[in-house]
Length: 560
Image (tube, rainbow, N blue to C red):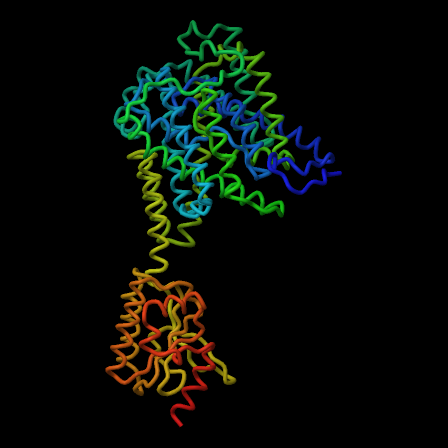
């Protein structure tokens, strides 16, 4: 039985509530807590913030998204990509792990949250489409490589600055000499436990089991005496709600704007891609603009509760979905469990070895490396593979923020390339009195004296010159000479200023050769643009025909 009210302002991801689904949502919430608690603790290692702040991301932010968001499946919380971007953004602005560093992390979350709410006001959910899946795969793969490399130091027990980037890892292998063997054993044991349990079932909380085991071993055998570093004291209790406490100069604020915008784009793209995928899987609708409210509120909640930027998480969403969860109720159950952990169970975390946490994060990074996706791009779209690879390399060698900005630029480049040289064609006679489209090199006329040129993209500045070149080539190599040249605009949904002026110059060039320019299947909005540009005044209203068949009839009457 479901609640009957169909109009909800709040808890859209929970309502209508189905009692028959309640047991599955509860179990999914328990599963998410078991799997995600060690994961979010790992993300704090990436972001450079205290471990407890990872647990905070599963409280107020998760509740606020359930309250204001519209997706029933999307899980919002700490995420490896935005955590890595956070670390890059704050490098040099404050000492990692310091109160100022954490306050600046809160400021970034606040800025991102405001950007998301402003985007909702202007219905900018469509910005999710400005990161192609190609560059998103490359971006996340680069983040995965960077994250996993950054954990090698913790797994080996060497100073964190010693092997935290690619160059140092490749050039300074001699630092392995100071590696702590005990740390290595713990890290390897953690990896073996998690991977082995995953082979049995992905539903087994391998990371949680490994963490609990490591805590017990550390407590029983006092591993600190062997030089094995543990987390140390983890504050208990719920977070105190307050604004980020930092004296923010205008110079620092300006430095935070680019990374905040980059995070904003990643959050929109990744959250939308995840919510769309799972909504389609379950036959539900998705509202990108509605989710912007939930994402904005979640990030503001993160800032107020002493945490850091949160994002729509594909991994956590998959955890809930595979466990049978079908609404945000599962996420509310998770938040309740995390509340109990913060109130009652933070003391044992003191004994957790850093090597174990580094191993957990290392696996998170490895899972982000999408070799299968890169191979698919290479086999299906080789040109786009190089775009993805360049994005990956920039993230690894330069930085996450630069990588996402490049990803945006490359996504637009890929889009522009598709429209820069569209696969246009000409219409020629086929068997049985029918027509078909062929490549331009055939240069065959539909009827002697009439050539029909089909343009297969919007006409805009990037392809205007290309269009003119193709048309003049067809005209100059036509046999017999043309009397009419028809542009089939059935696939054209927009004409910008540059292309309209190009069409006007084409009309004049064709006029000098006594060739009439006509159009077929022009959409109403495109016709309005041609009217405003003055082209209709040049060619005459009689040059527009509803179909190519109408053009053929008119031409045949003309030549008789």
